[in-house]
Length: 114
Length: 97
Image 1 (cartoon, each protein chain N blue to C red):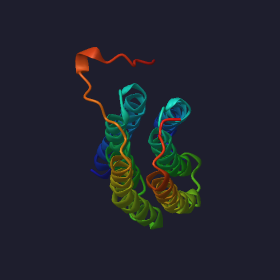
Image 2 (cartoon, rainbow over the protein chains, first blue to last red; image 1 turned 180 degrees about the vertical axis):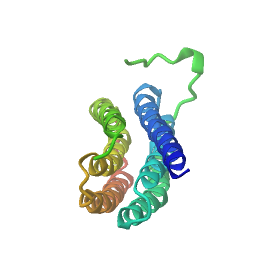
Image 3 (cartoon, one colour; image 1 turned 30 degrees about the horizontal axis):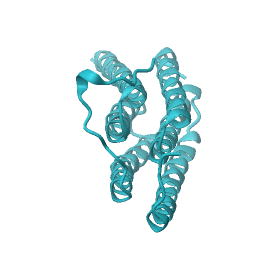
Image 4 (cartoon, rainbow over the protein chains, first blue to last red; image 1 turned 30 degrees about the vertical axis):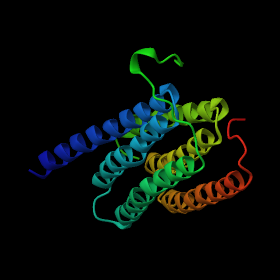
């Protein structure tokens, strides 16, 4: 019974870790391919929240009830609180100094890399 | 440390690849804010990478480093934004280098 529980915990933890890795890659590709600043900001904020939640939840399931779990929870809470704050600060700063954000038609995006 | 080393190595490689992509955006980005965004993303990915490496090598000291670096990264990004905002709005110059 305990063995089955450990196996299921390992399975869920592996799934969460892989989900976190996929989210980090999606955010990284998005910051390179998006056409202008505010869309890139949105792509980067995906890594701040979703990847943090998935990776740290997967790692917390691995380490049981110990000091490491508490430290992981502290790092995760801090990143979840300050990631969106930094995103908001960047968007506010860009908007208030007048960064041009032209209307981008999705069919006519020319800036493609990778 | 345990049987999950392969998964942790895969996650670490994915985070490293994303950091390379962020550096490419920092080099390419036409405005200052693109570069600040890429630097912020690089810093948060460093904190994630430190936590994953802590589990990969089985040393729990790296978690303290991750927490310290997350704090430092936030303060640094806010300071850079404050500096550029005061500089740009005071002189009204173009922000595309």
